[in-house]
Every structure is written in structure tokens, then in C-alpha cells.
Image (tube, rainbow, N blue to C red; front, side, top):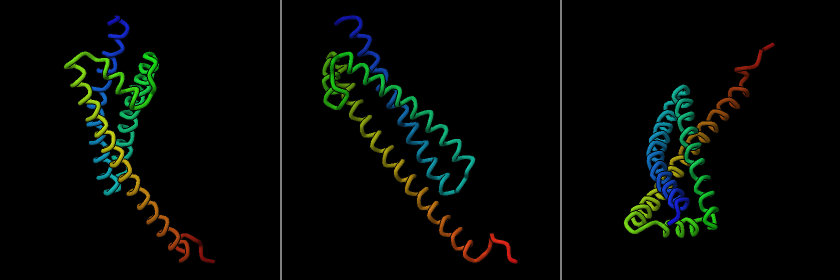
Length: 146
């Protein structure tokens, strides 16, 4: 195996492991955010959102880097290309990395679902607030009486 190929494969392996760790943190942050949304704690929400943005930025950078590695190996930037890339790893390392990649897919899906749940909660809160403000505006609560 060429030195360049070995370095690129090592980079992919490292990035997948880092993604696994960051998705654990992202999951925790999304769960925390849900609790903060329920409590309407705007300061905590802002801190959680900042942490989520930082985690997602790192995840996105590593995904882009994997895409470049796939391109360097003349593979498509899709599931099939990634599976072919993983086949290029030697023996036991390949099996462990394939398990990590599958576990990572599960983590991604779980975080997607948690994010959607938070989005639904936020939309519901916004709708309730809009309804309350519309009712109050109709009763002249915030309008001057002449």
C-alpha cells in the first residue's frame, strides 16, 4: 500500500472515530436543548445552540474531508463509494471500521430525530405565542385607548 493511500485511510479511520464521539455529545446537547425549550430558558438555549453549531461544524468538516478522500480514490461520494473505501482497509481494521460506520449511521439518524423533535416543539411554542399575541391584540391589550 502506498504511503499516501495509507495516510488517507488512516485519516478516514480517525475521522469516523471522532464523529462517533461528537455524535454522542450532539445527542446529549439535543436532549439538553429539549429540556431547555420546555423550560423556556433562553440563556441555556443560546448556550446549547452554540455548542450544537460547534459540533455540527466539526462533523461537516470531517464529512467534507471524507468526500475529498473518496474523490482521491476515484469513488462516488455516496454510500456505495464509502463501502468500497472501507473494503480497502486491511482485515480486522476493516471489520471494526465497518461496525463503527454502521453505528455512526445509527447515531446520525437518532440525532436527526431528536433535532426534528426539538423543531416540532419550537414550532408548537411559536404557534401558541402567535395565538396569544393575536388574541391580546384583538382585545386592545397592547393598543392605546383614546
